[in-house]
Length: 90
Image: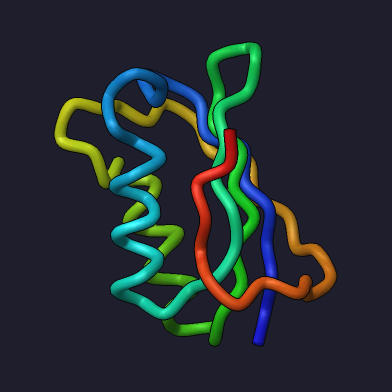
């Protein structure tokens, strides 16, 4: 198991990005959270096995939302959290 945090920039708010991120995470058995930030970015904490987490990161970089466009992703490793599912946080 591995955990990361990501800050995603681009056209990522108002395009269904958080909900399609959740769908991707659920499909890959990745747990964590996704939320909008005041500056227009999206913040994600995600954890899962290394292979599925790598697939999740790749999917986020490609934008899981067809209307979204990712221009930058900052990723760093964090300690494992107590997540059991992936939630959209408001």
